[in-house]
Image (cartoon, rainbow, N blue to C red; front, side, top):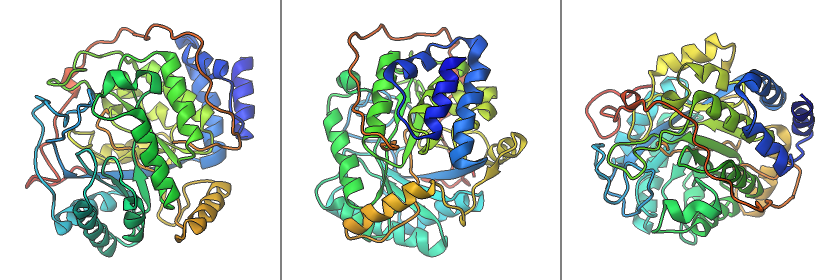
Length: 408
């Protein structure tokens, strides 16, 4: 297929595909799916080999969020029967993180619900970062605390954070349909604050909320332009008790096409399969490792993932290997660029990766500064027939905030 040959060549050169090419990937047929995966896999292996980076989530504060994000089980007015608790103490968070590190995680993602942290919250998280790093040598720490105020990214960096996650989630054109209590511009501003402070900026998307192909391409192009180091691709978990509970729009095949499109647009960026992979990719999860070079280990914020050992078995059986703490995630040209940016911000340099943390529910310029193209028309949302698999949506009842051992 000429399209795929062109996309592979562009991916190996870090050249931005055209908007039409990105849309064409999403429009490929199931008959061509394995060819699409194989082509995107060539780009993935060129930049990342057969390594898979493992990341582990610790939910520092669960539920009771004042924001109204329609996809989120922790939102204002959510009737989802999730765990609700206030801040974990630093030693509790560190103990939870240690379970993930013991399971092979290279990065720990510290997440707290809410609009954004107060200065006192930043102090609290700084103590937690110190505890995690003291007890887990060599671990990377990513914080995800919501919208940042001026100076807070610098304080987190000074406390030892390596990265900051804040997802764009969907296109600018449709963001107002998903969330009313803050704006798409607010999210972009926080990613930019993290990047300017010398943190590894991480930002991703949620697929399956009724968006069109054009929306998916818009958000991935926007993420690339933001120059973040990783793109977590979440697949909506339609939690009962949330406004999007009936949105079962994804098939395993569509999920693979979305991951492939993201890889072609962001060839040398850490692409992570994040929330919802077990629900929507199901038995095709191993195939997705040919597209993404990073996953979460074990459970998510408010939902259960598959067993941690099953994750490790899947990676090995598919012919991949877990990335070690002595291995650098990103290609050398991105590491060097990150070090220069960190030095300009007055910070030391770190190996850069990324974190995507929605329970669903960025990528950098990659050698091109082409702006995001605007669609001349907005197609109707793509709805592929898929059976509602509510049996696969399990609320997390173990790990952080409970007395039960975590899944790692």
